[in-house]
Length: 143
Image (cartoon, rainbow, N blue to C red):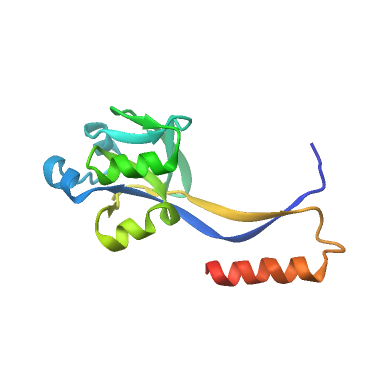
């Protein structure tokens, strides 16, 4: 329970709602959290709810759709193919956003939560210099 491990934040990896241009053209772009009920949501099999920040407080909604998958790659592929809206992390879809095969969706009433990327360390005392340098280099390269 108290393992003595210490988590050190490296950077954020924000969640992003996204869909293909074809999905948005054919089904419209949701504007609010409630609008997601009118769309097929593509989700990871193990993730039954999507969590958002609403006025600084977490709020979750159950999501449903025609498909779910056990891998991020599969959900991303289904989304690119125009089969619904997905919530993935920015790093998972960065290339697709740049290419235009996916479009980020902003909702007026909520923001997707950020997922921190953290290094888990045995302690902050007696941390070998090379480990500290590695974490600092990783943090700088991910910024």
